[in-house]
Length: 266
Image (cartoon, rainbow, N blue to C red; front, side, top):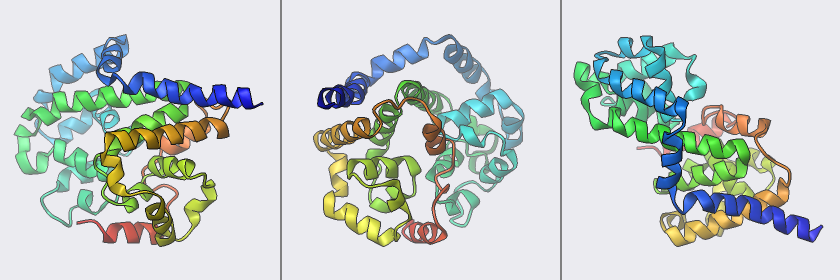
């Protein structure tokens, strides 16, 4: 039994390390996938032709590519919602994107800033190669998740770590909070505890600044992947991955948590 668990522990951690140690090479493999290459070529050939949010939403192929790049693929159907995000932009602090707890919508509106730049919005690098780079990383993580959900979670946390400044941000994201609970050996039911109590516990165990340190982040993710495999010895791409990544960050969070998180935003 111990030998089996040890082998399982190595599985997720080693799989994660094989990707994390050379992400550029892993991205190159993603770029060569026929479907990815075809969709990327279409995107780059056509995105600069888009002169308005309406045109953007009408071209379903471009829109879906961009949505996936920002991890919003599950919201492809919500074009009216996204139209509001784009229409109001980001300049006004009371705009729709600025009010949403999930920062992905703000990032999307900033990248495709038709409200601020009109027909020139797609001429910026962020709307062209910048979006392609995001799409590649997103696809890399999804491909990893097809084999092992724990690997995808580790790669996702690694990507987000540099922007984390407080534990409320982690609690606002179902995937990040799953990593944190797993690393601490906490049950999923802990997510329903008082938000301040959750943050207090996290702060007693880790300094948020540690996630900015590559060495400390690596140790944290080693801990997470080891515990993940022990708890999920036969886990692969299952329904739990769908729950974590196919819902907006607000999914499954109480109203109290949302209000608390919103209160710390600038």
